[in-house]
Each structure stands twice: as C-alpha cells, then as structure tokens.
Length: 78
Image (cartoon, rainbow, N blue to C red; front, side, top):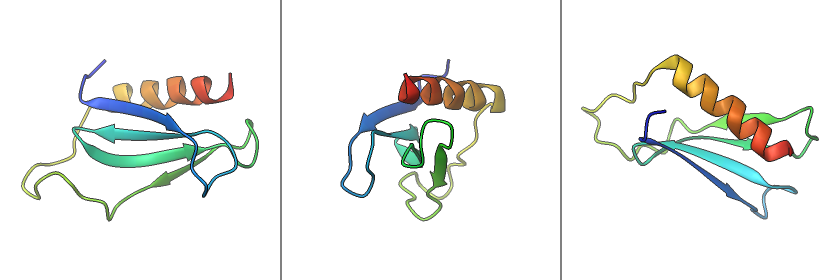
C-alpha cells in the first residue's frame, strides 16, 4: 500500500468513542467515527484543511484508498 497514507486512531472529546483520522502526504483527508455504533460508522471529509501546496494535487489510486478505508473500519470496530 502507498506509504503516503497515514491512519491515526484517537479519542477526541468531540466524539464519544475511538475515532480514526486518515491523511495523505500530511494532508488530513477525513475522520471516521463510530458514535452511532459499529454498524453505522460515519466519515467526515475535510475540504478546508489544506496543508499541501495548492499546486500539488491530492490524487491517489482509488483501490488503495478503498482498501485503507475498509481496513480502518475493521480496526475501529474490532
């Protein structure tokens, strides 16, 4: 898998349960929370938290991102 992705699991006072934050090349992409239970995970995308220079596109293979989302989901609920 692409080593530009990073997943950080944390507990934030904004959420009741463990949350996962997914970044790409230092750019925060989204958070997955399980406040509505393990069968109702929610993903929140951060379109306004741009860290990477504007001229650099945040572009990556879809299959890698989907696989990472599934693995992160599995890690959160187990």
